[in-house]
Length: 289
Image (cartoon, rainbow, N blue to C red; front, side):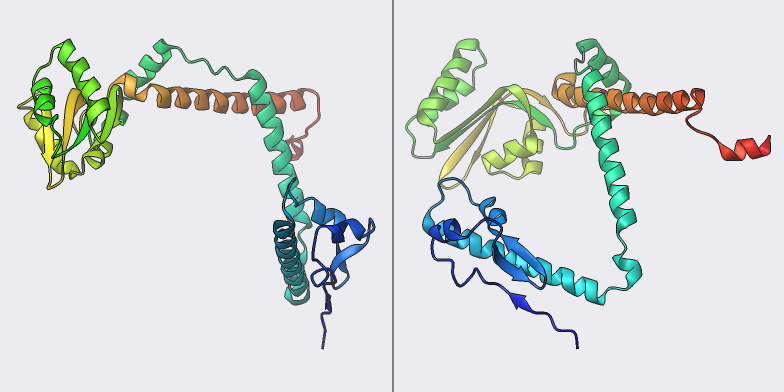
């Protein structure tokens, strides 16, 4: 019966970092069968400035993981049929894919134009409007969370009921100074599901209230707190979101397409050049002739 001898010499001896300093270069600190783990391998995994205790723990864990991996490898070599142990083709395929991937990245990075004009974004947006329908609705506004005991609630509601510039500014000041949580997103579009979570309300209920649009603001009250939503702009669920909301994602799509086009051109040019320089022969075509 095949026997596997495991010799791990370092584990019992590791008491401090000074141990590693005493081990001469090239001397193994652990061994599984005929494979050894050396001091230089251990030193690579130790962070600079690590404490004595942490060093010992890291080294012990590393040696144990290394030993388990080597044991599994030995078991695989023992138990797997010969056809499954031949990985040369897989390694060559991986090497090919890795080299091609690195070259393609270098080629693209040297040539890719990452500037996308507003006109390009608008053209793409107008051609794909149906792709930009919002599922939940999006909104610009602010959420102000107040404790029900706050003496500033009446003043806040008075200001929220107005829509002049001065009142809007005062609401912001009051939100920062007197609320227990204030989220201002008046300059950016936010998905309504995020706003509903901020307010502690069910999304569908918030959608219904916004659809009514009876007042300049909406409030949701529970036993402890009241959440106020002041809305500046709102796109309802099922409607097309504005270009502004999709601008960055459109930019990414356009750049991605440019990258794809560059790679296709690279492959086409290389193939054409190889044919012209007779670096490639189509054997079947020659036979047909």
